[in-house]
Amino acid sequence: MTSVLEPATEEVMAELPEVGEAETDAAVERARRAFPSWRAVSPGDRSTLLHGLADALAEHVEELARLEARNAGKPIGDARGEMQMVVETFRYYAGAPERLLGKTIPVEGGVDMTFREPLGVVGLIVPWNFPLVIAAWKVAPALAAGNTLVLKPAELTPLSALELERLALEAGLPKGVLNVVAGSGRVCGQRLVEHPHVAKVAFTGSTAVGRGIAAAAAGTIKRVTLELGGKSANVVFADADLEQAAASAPIAVFGNAGQDCCARSRILVERSVFDRFLFHMEETVHALRVGDPLDEETTMGPLISAAQREAVRSYVPEDAPVAIRGSAPEGPGFWFPPVVLAPVANGDRAAREEIFGPVACVIPFEDEADAVAVANDTVYGLSGSVWTRDGARALRVARAIDAGVVSINSNTSVRVTTPFGGFKQSGVGRELGPDALHAYTEEKNVYYATEPGSGPAAALPSESAAP
Ligand code: NAP
Ligand code: MG
Image (cartoon, rainbow, N blue to C red; front, side, top):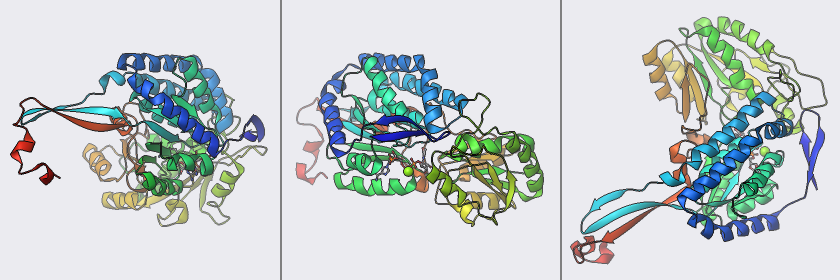
């Protein structure tokens, strides 16, 4: 058995049976058997089934939120918001089976048309920071497009995925369509990536593991979507609404205890307002309530594990330039206080590496060109923000930042209806929005000759001359 812990108490929440390669293979086999009939379900019926699953999830929002809050250590208010997003994601893609449109293309001698075909069995591997939300971003479009799937949650946070599997069966999804393998990444995740009957792997996690997945996927020419790490810039110009920018900057790093790939953990502030910005920020940091995830007043929970806390601690050595330090409970629980480091140089380790904990770096800049250069001086490119009252500059800088999602006078990153994903080493491909469906389909081109003897082949010297 493996134990699932509650990071706020270090107590065991659940014991799950050990699963490995054999169980992973069995899940892939169930998905493979279920695929022909799932793909044949009419678009209208597939839509109805997905709406049914959204309804089932909606009925269980509160209990799912409590489960996730306890297992991932996140504030209950945030967990509720996440479960609402899970429901919205299923609703959004529930409408998709009937909108998987193709094209007709005018060609000589006939008609050409395209279809969006499902891939087959897809393997979905998700992290522990937003367990069910990130699973939903993958599961909903994959099913809507007619695939069957094997979902591997993180070993630390498997409970909400197991609930999803149960609710899917309850909502009437055929057996074998949605399978959960709650095992380790090294064994079960790796097996999914190498499995010859898995057509695609959609992965969210660290850049290091993503790199290994990209390499392992090459063996079977698997399709891959990778949503990886980030070190995003929050760029604040002197002409911004400083109080608003400073009030929202802390939560953009300390939300989910900093364990957020979109964390705007490099706060770039124009030098002339640097001290004023820090002054305003201080109040918000001290207003954070770090504590019991199930307490309605809590705004920041513990870190996910002891190992994560040790990793985060290494970025705040004795001589670190700590400008603001919040408070955190004493143990048990994997607590760490919110910390603001300032001033930091962009070359410092804390500014270069994804910390994945509540540590913010505040970095001064000189002018617009400098801000863009510093924002882009990173291997990552996931998200970012620009704060200014100059509209033209806002758009210029938003366009110049090499990141998949940039918000202006806001720190939001994610909406069900808009694309999300990374530039550079933050990943490959996009999730959410209408085009995410395409990542779970192959485009097929069908040519129908309507005028025998006059098609393109007849116009070429020979068939074999065509590429
Ligand atoms: P991780 O260590 O990369 O793990 C992510 C998932 O991959 C887990 O399910 C893990 O399984 C599995 N895994 C580990 N080794 C594997 C292997 N060799 N083959 C296949 N699967 C493997 O990431 P994490 O520590 O859970 O999450 C933190 C990272 O995720 C951060 O870097 C963060 O930026 C990134 N993230 C990115 C996004 C985004 O959308 N871009 C969103 C959230 C998080 P086990 O845990 O069970 O071993
Ligand atoms: Mg990990």
